[in-house]
Image (cartoon, rainbow, N blue to C red; front, top):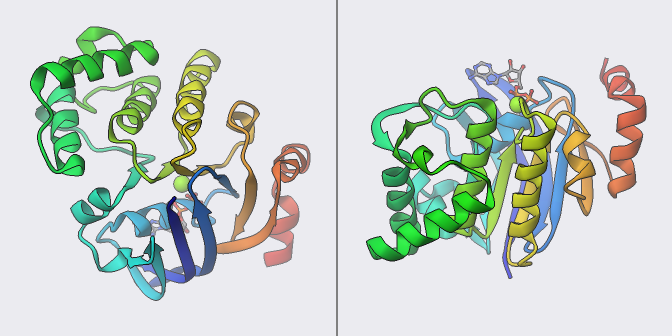
Length: 248
Ligand SMILES: Nc1ncnc2c1ncn2[C@@H]1O[C@H](COP(=O)(O)OP(=O)(O)O)[C@@H](O)[C@H]1O
Ligand SMILES: [Mg+2]
């Protein structure tokens, strides 16, 4: 049983206040959707939790099972059980997908998996996501299509089995088939009940496949409305306009 607690989080980027007091608690077995218009600060929340150096926490706290996440290095956060899938992952020439995943698994588990076992694990994960075998030898993120990036994210989830997974715009740029494969991957992964998922999305589309337990609407750098899955249905019908009006 794990809990991610975000308490009154304030974050600035380049001296501009972006997050203005975010409160959110995610527990294992729960899926929370964060929805909101472009520029409302959704990715800023993900980056701040990840420990990206450009994002300065100016107030509040983030706790993982009671431990202060914000004082941890990025590696320590991963070892503590946090996983973040970024909207724009970086390319790493010279590092293969397979090498990257084995290093990541080693870092998180605290010991290197036996090569034969890892190879088997990797193959199972790739088969589950309909990823071609040759993909494992490609350079990390280099020339990945939108669908390949997202499948790679879900593959990482399956191998790393984090306590809390933060997925930023996992649905963007996916065609319907890829969206289904990725959604099935998320569902398989959260089916264990051991993991809490924070699913950040602008569109309601993915929420037809991955049913959230809670929906939070982001506007102006904080949560302005909360509800159950029915709130996502309303947003699909009405859009975000009324939140924009409320802020103006
Ligand atoms: N690295 C950055 N440098 C300058 N401004 C940024 C940076 N990242 C985000 N911002 C600003 O912060 C606000 C929120 O952006 P973001 O968190 O990406 O929103 P969302 O993910 O909801 O679209 C925007 O006004 C954006 O321009
Ligand atoms: Mg974003």
